[in-house]
Every structure is written in C-alpha cells, then in structure tokens.
Image (spheres, rainbow, N blue to C red):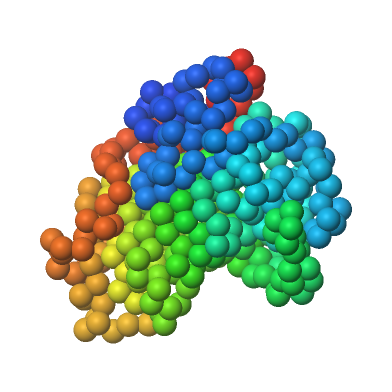
Length: 368
C-alpha cells in the first residue's frame, strides 16, 4: 500500500524552487524555448562539465524516419547526431523514432526533447562510443532491441561495419563528459543505461526507470581494469515499478549515488564486483515485501573475506519496510573523495526533489 501511494501521488507535484539544484537552475524560466542552452550550465556531479552542443547552432529534427543508416537524410535525428560540428538538437513535433540501427553519436551534441513528446523506441537505440560532451534530455527510450551486422555511418566522412549490439537503451563505450537528464527509460533487451570500456565523467539524473531487469551497468567486466578511473554520479532519479536489479551495478571505479527514490526492486538495488567504491547518500529505499530481498546491496562473485575491504558507505539514507544497506571498507579511506561529486540533500526531501523525474511536459510560454 505504501508503494502504491508513493508512486501515484509523487507524479502530480510541481518542481520549481524545491531544492533540486539541476531543476532550480533552469525550470523556473517560462521562456525556456528561447533559452534552451541554459540547460548546459545546470549539470551537477561527475558529468557537470558536459556542454553538449552549447557552442553550436540549433538543429531541428523534422522527420522521425530512419531511412538509411549509411546515408541519413537531412532533418532526421541520425543526420543530426553524426555531424562533426557542435549542435543543439530539438524536435519540430511529437514523434516516435524507430531506428533501424544503432544511433552512433558524434561529440558535442545535445538531444533536447523539451516541447515535444519524443520516443526512441521499438528498434535500435543510442550508442555513445569514444566521443565526449553529450547531453541527452527529455526523451522516452524504451523497447530497444539488438541490431547490427551491417554498415552504419558515424560521421559525414565515415561509416563502418557494426557487429551485433546488445539492445541497450543508452550504451556508453569509452565516452566521457556525458549527462543524461529527465529521460524515461524502460523495457529494453539488455541494459537501460550501460557505461563500459573506460567511460567516465558521467551524470545520470532526474530520470524515471521502470519495467526492466538489469537497469544500469557501470563497468565492463571484472577483468577490465581500465575502468578503475570511472566516475559516475547517479542523482535525483526515481527507480520505479517493475525493476529487478542493477540500480546500478558497479565495477572498479567510483560511484556517487545520491538522493534517488527507490520504490521497487526484486533482487537488490545497488550492487557490484571488482572492488568499486560506492558512496550512497540521502537516498530513500523502500524494500519489497519479499523477506529475502530486503538488502539494498549485493556483492557479486566474492566471498566476505574479499568484499569486506570494498569501500561501500551509506550516509543519511532512509530505510523503509525493513531495507538495510550492508556497509564495508575502511570508512575514511583516502580514495573515498573520488566517490563524492556534489552535496547531497537530506533523505527527507527526496520525495519532492524526485517528484517529476522522467520526461517533463514543457509548453511554450510556461514553466516546464
């Protein structure tokens, strides 16, 4: 009953001046249409320096179709994201974009869905590979499926053969300075957001995750030690109904998980392997009814003699319905600062600062 109350009432609250530092940076501006690029100044956490297409011109997507992944037409999302110049990409109208192949993004791009109801769905989805300065804001991403074994263009001058993809919603592969904000993600074949192979300087914020098994993987594999320098901030998100595990699952690097609202998990919320440093601050954890799934944390493929030295800390988290966080490590580790990216708010305000997590309804002339 408590979960139903949290999930149903929270969506009707209005966020403006609530203490969410990202939203309070831009959402009180009713002239957001003419000030779109102000958003680029509002990121927090490890991805705070992601500027996307702030220094470029505007590009308006007018056509939802994905005709030819090798020769994309002007006016399509694929044509926009492969350009070498910085671009701030918005959408002329509501659209469902069914991608035939992975959307291979080039550096210095913003995908800004405000003012339109934009779904990237029922096909391949977004790949951020060996590029930097990407902002993805205000889009629905769901029902993503594997694609590949064909040629796909990644810039105006290059296309190449892509092997089979996993079917992630957003796949970050060797990317840096990445910010995903106010997106709604669900029901993909593999992960909703995966960051692997040396990716770092990432913030995932204000997003709404539902109906998925393996939600978020941060770190390629236990053997891929290049991820030791990965730094990811996961803040102000709502992990909602129908989720099973990996919110997130971490390897090797440094992870700041703060002020998120966890209202559903079936196995665990935060997990990891290969000695990640996890700083959990000011989150609200509502445990499921299943008595075997009350623990927030899960150590993968490790005995206690190994994981007890992993630095996992819970500070100011609110535990509901029997939820508990199994801490480990030395506490005041000299490396722990690498897992702190921004100030956390008290867990008592998580409900208000995450109430509008996910895609916002933005109308010209009104606040979002």
